[in-house]
Image 1 (cartoon, rainbow over the protein chains, first blue to last red):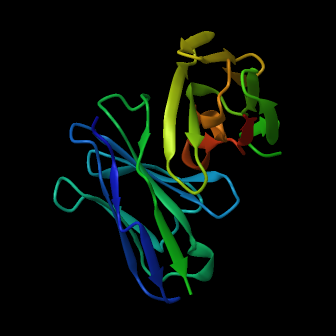
Image 2: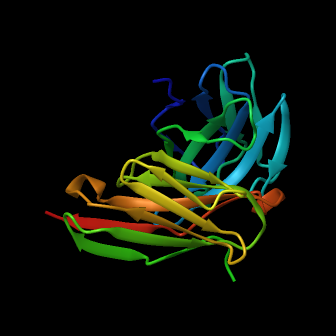
Image 3: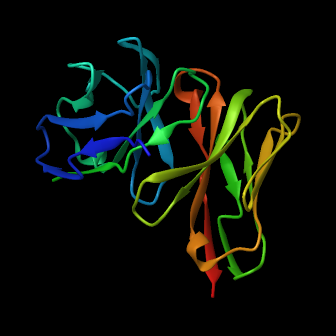
Length: 114
Length: 112
């Protein structure tokens, strides 16, 4: 069964550094999402992306964050200057041709900011 | 008050019993999805119910949706030890920050 993959599984970085988290969506999927889950808390929506544009974003998704699909396959989340409070599990999700269909989640990237 | 509340927060049952979890939301929705998360791992999709549906079944899972009360419930029948996990609802609708809202989750423990 096709699945969403994410790399790396764990990223450790120093405060102030830039990080790029990568996601490979299911091949024919058109809608992409990033979520985060701070340890012990609920999953929070960051951003949705369709047709090479951000379609929705949350209050969390400020100027420090950006997303792109650089090569038509990977979908990336960049955090420009990481803060301690960015430490969380980051999940990518994708949906097929219908924007209101099932979201399939990747295994997540654990980001630790020191 | 918070969007996406679930209750109970934790539930402990014996193998073979049924488990019911509830989810409430604030905005109008297009659909509501239920996910399972094993400790520290990814989210596994269980079932999706659309706003014009009232009940849906998948194997041992039964989901109901009451849009007038803005609530949904997930019933797992004949539970197994392998069902031990956290269960989350995801309400899709609204816009911006409220476009996709996860519930706070129910931690289910099934005792063998």
